[in-house]
Length: 232
Image 1: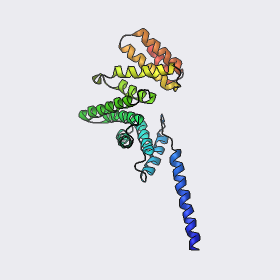
Image 2: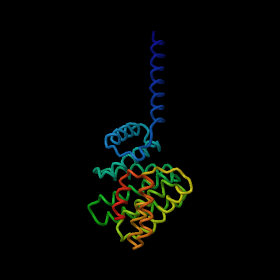
Image 3: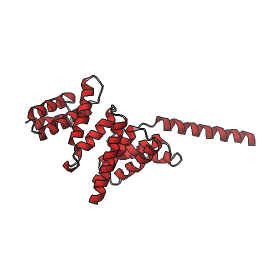
Image 4: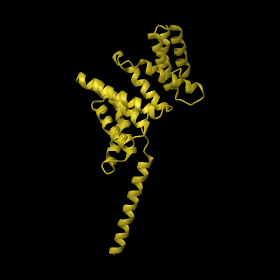
């Protein structure tokens, strides 16, 4: 009887362990997710797994990017959480340019969210250093280039990053023009921001050409609507 109970217990443990492995392997990184409830659920799941697998890079990345997306939505504390998760993931996998890029973006948002000017500037500079390092590691990675371009575009003029944003978005759009498949909404965003940069340089014809491309890339998107308004 004791032997039977032992085998039943062993089988139960093995099934539980196997189920855990399947769940972990099936976890998807929440790229582009903007649903607060979904992000909260992903983050709860990640935290549960990290309690027993604290150095699991995949789950650290999952938690970090979920927190990053929440930080984009300006959820209190999310940017600091993103930095903590992604910093650890980057330490465990230092050659992963994508993790480094998300870390850089998270630092920039932590700067945005800080109450102190010194911390704002310090975090942004840490973010820019991480982003530049990520692009240096993998200059052809479209995700990395888009993230750096987006962060650079959004920063105040004092950081002098508009040229970097322009170069990253030009690379991004040129890849699309050469046949690389890119999400239409992201492509429209890149063209729209290139248009705004050209507008700032008083290059109206070039700006309108970019706005036209934004409308063509994703006609129903918010970026297309903004491009249409910018052309009027």
